[in-house]
Image 1: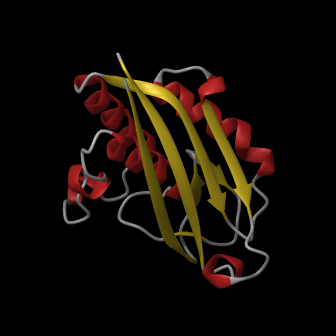
Image 2: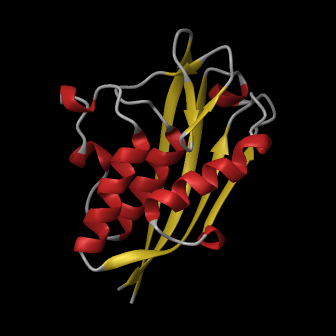
Length: 158
């Protein structure tokens, strides 16, 4: 049996924060604002996984009103999502994700992002796709006000 889920996340870019995407600390002049490390890529992937199983979203599991998640490493949170999915009898078939950012260039970091997700999810790198695109200077991402990510997860019965 297969289940498909979609995830989306967006965070505002601000000074004084690290830019963490796919668990990679990317050198940049600004970073993403959020309760945790604000890793939009990992957040979108987790929401896609949870959505596929009708288990809500990461806000349900890791509420931003709970101080224990303040500054949390999103890859650690992802390990919990993987555990919950397995507890419900599912594992990753494949994940396809797209990060939308005008800057910085993400291509040099894509393989490391994929490797980080693979390590946490316990799957093969061929099951994880991460892409990056710009919006040609249009909208909030194009104006460098924030970064967004979309992800689709195909979850398979164990």
